[in-house]
Length: 125
Image: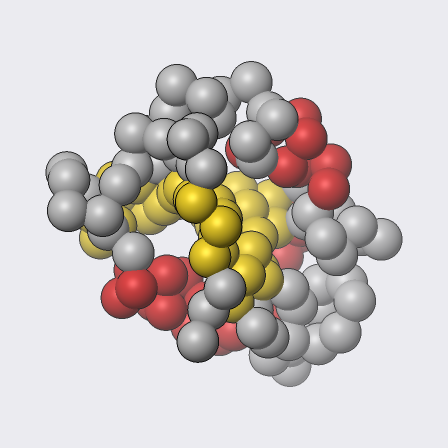
């Protein structure tokens, strides 16, 4: 069971063990499938507050008129992304994205990976 909060502007879903999924107003179930942004947070911001406020969340500049979903995964390795060779995080990020694709109205050909600061290192890996 995933707790969901519906508002007039967006849909927010918390996925235990993986993170937060937010869908902009233009991306509703039953409508046209939407792109997915997998957004990896910077070091020390496991709640992705910076990304949510400045870019992708309901308070961000691209969200209100958007037609996309964004997932803010939590690292499998703990609080920050592990960018070492033996890291579990790359597979975990793919698994999180696959789960969102299965459970939301996502266009599989439009999945984008974005990382901010330390999250960019994890995205590059």
